[in-house]
Amino acid sequence: MKTVAFHTLGCKVNTYETEAMQQLMEAAGYRCVDFGEKADIYIINTCSVTNIADRKSRQMLHRARKMNEDAIVVAAGCYVESAKKRIDEDLSIDIIVGNNNKNEIVNIINEYLQDKNENKFIIDINKSSDYEEFHISKINDHTRAFIKVQDGCNQFCSYCIIPFTRGRVRSRKMENIIEEVKKFADSGYKEVVLTGIHLSSYGIDFLDESYNKRMEWLTAREESDEEFVKKNELLNLIENISEVDGIERIRIGSLEPRIIKEDFIKSLGNIDKFCPHFHLSLQSGCDKTLKSMNRKYSVDEFYKGVEIIRKYFDSPAITTDIIVGFPGESKLDFEESKNFIEKVKFYETHIFPYSIREGTKAANMPQVDGNEKAKRANILSEINLVNQREFRKLRLGKADEMLCEENFIKDNIEYYTGYTKEYVKVAVLKGELKANDIVRGKIVKFLTDDILLMEKEAD
Image 1: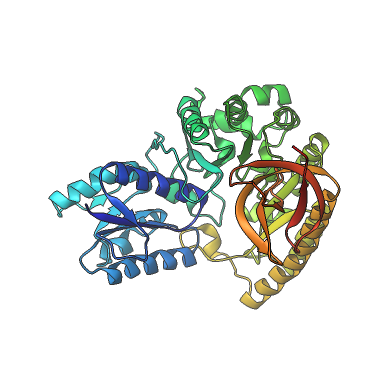
Image 2: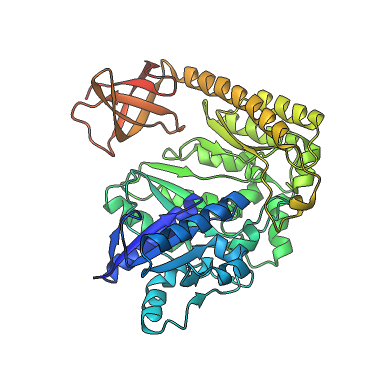
């Protein structure tokens, strides 16, 4: 029995795809081992979102070769798509697998074992229009189940390579998603997380109109909310998942700010199983910078979306991503962005100093000094810490629920930690509880700076 070791870099979509490839290999008779062990086959699911991600991908590929000179080393994923020439010249790599061929990993490995002359399995990602179907029934080492529902992106932000490494929007058929959700429910999972490269675009490729017409309904300001909701396949998907017995919580990944319309949010508010944690990627709180980024909304439109969310949910968690030091961002631009972040009061802000990504428009724009980027990131980090604590304080004294995930010991007392629907980390006395239990009770105090203590309600 040949052994295979996987290593994943990058996003939750990559994590899902690695789990799927692992289960395919196991079903075909291969034995999976930890990446640090000597294996017959190493499969590295690479990332290419930044130049640093490229470098890490190369490092892991070379590390695999050093661990076993005789092993088969497989490079899969985004780095394969973005650095085709460099990949071809890398002698540490035996097999190259593109993003739209990962579901053929067993056939690819078997074919290579029979004929080592065939080692490149890449389909032009920009010409692929079909969703590459995976099916999995468990997620290793996770209490919640991540489910990939969509791939690709049509946005072409000026700093982002993803449309070139993942291709155009391709959505998974709803019936296949529901089938997988039911399998997870049968396996005991109570929470599912919907993920994709551009989740808000789920289903636009199901519409019969041309691409331009498809984008019109996503961006049009004049159409009614009722018309918008009728066309929103993501909402339909969430509603259908909510009807699956055994699933008690539905969480979603990052959303495009333009999808936040009143009837869309109102409809989500009517789904009891929906977790009110909205990750809206702002990227900048300055209109000039947003335009330079090719982000197709203004800060005013973004803020209106935040107000709509807070209208229909009590203390929802709103989190975001911010890039500081984007090419051309002046000190005044940054100050404008900082003021907007303070105005919104995000629960959590993921802060990224701009990193050059070769192959994008932003790479050729005037760059901001590295020290200045670090200074701006530190300023926003301080604001983020204050906002996180203030949001957690709002939970004190409230009835809430958590999903038990991990053991935690403080002052020789055993707890289970997990997250509320708003993704606030909470602890509860362990007692007879076990992983994957949903516990309801009252938030009483801070256990640590970032963990709240819940008193379990009486059975």
